Length: 104
Image 1 (cartoon, rainbow, N blue to C red):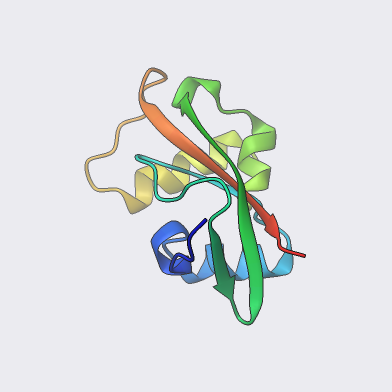
Image 2 (cartoon, rainbow, N blue to C red):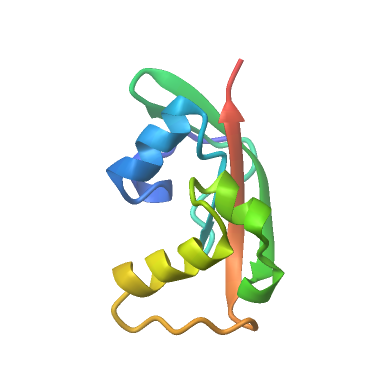
């Protein structure tokens, strides 16, 4: 278990605020940024990474999108296309799921 910088896992203010408020409980990234048991802090709240799994973009569901603070998978796709210059959705693309919760 390590302490990681929240900015490394949650790359923008919206994601960090969403985690703090309980609206964001996971993030998919292009590679692994944390291990299970790692902890990070957002505005004085400590979080623990409780699951890290490899997936593909094609595995993602509307529920996954909601857990990342989006309305649905369509909005999630739109955001990814907008924030990543050379991004093209490919169902076979590998991603890494990082799930987290407030630590006790």
